[in-house]
Image (cartoon, protein in one colour):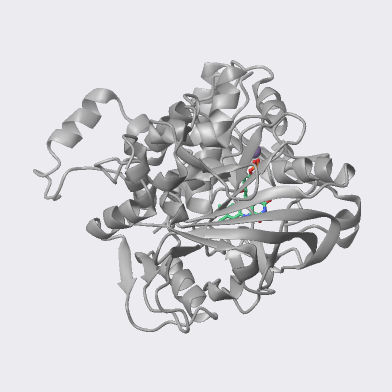
Length: 497
Ligand SMILES: Cc1cc2nc3c(=O)[nH]c(=O)nc-3n(C[C@H](O)[C@H](O)[C@H](O)COP(=O)(O)O)c2cc1C
Ligand SMILES: [Mn+2]
């Protein structure tokens, strides 16, 4: 093998880490890829049980499938901490957000690996022998429209004008032995923009569907970086070294060399096929419609490949857990670069940001404008709180909304590009593709004098309701009073019981 140490950082290594940390359940009994594996992995998410590794799939000897790889653990973000190689899996979400933010701000160029050193090429299946049905793509939910080969994937495509390469997780549905449909939303996601360029030129778009890379590579793929920012280099930032890539066999793209499987294909211009619906990250099924079609040219894979499955639905899932940190890191970085001194940002369920900031003239509108400048930082709404509120704690946030938000501080902003996966769009909005977002400002006005605030809105809790000397006295005598244990108000982030 090459001297490149990151080549060993693959899915198999991560599965060992999960296993050693009690976050993996190896399932050796026979499980059907048809709905059963999906139901198991969803229940595992809802009960916050370890990620399942299916080792005995009906009709597919020699194949395995790992699911919900960055799903909810104990504590919630444990698997993310493990993927990042941290010894301490209890590291809190705000700490993880800072680590991710700095890693994404320190991109590293990928390293090209020779073909014969790339595990993903242990088996090469040429076009005439390609049969997608020989792989255990799961039918995940009864409410889904078909079998999905790509749910926890990396879709690699290249801008035909600039050569910039985009990575993202896009869902891919099996159509037949040699083709799959890929959801390339035309609105906000980069894949849709890039495909539009090929389609305008009447050219097929080369696409590589990567299955089963190290989770940090998938993490880079779902971070919503700006157009022309390389997710492959962001992956290097997260890994701390360049991601090892290898050239494809039939198309001009490079893919993670140690992935479990690579499907090389071309998306046909001017062709649309039935795709979806699919149980999605909003906790609802979404988007039954017409999507582009990819025709496979070649498949390469490791021996005894490990397939992957995401299982999106009501919180928590393996989209919400990583997105709760990634979006927070990306949003915080954007706000800091705009010189807006927010204290913290946290996306509850990966969907709704809560931003804590010291109120001052115009600051909330500045934050709103900055976040709206990236199409997916405010999907449905945003909550502003003051710096004394713990953004990761739903109880704290809802207390602030309930008590500090003047009813007139609930506002809507209209004429926002709609996300077709959004469940509440009206039929009209689905036509115009415009909707609204809301803002809740749960901060008391900065215009109040300190005296007015003191007289009418001092916080009544242990931390702020007593002077330091009284607090210290009570803390030091706590066991003397007959109470046991260290006095602590520590809680799990994200309002999860
Ligand atoms: C498991 C999973 C599945 C996803 N599936 C899709 C999808 O089918 N289509 C899509 O547009 N985004 C999907 N996303 C979200 C995108 O990966 C994410 O927004 C990413 O930042 C898009 O990258 P881009 O900005 O390079 O387009 C998915 C995310 C996860 C975690
Ligand atoms: Mn991108």
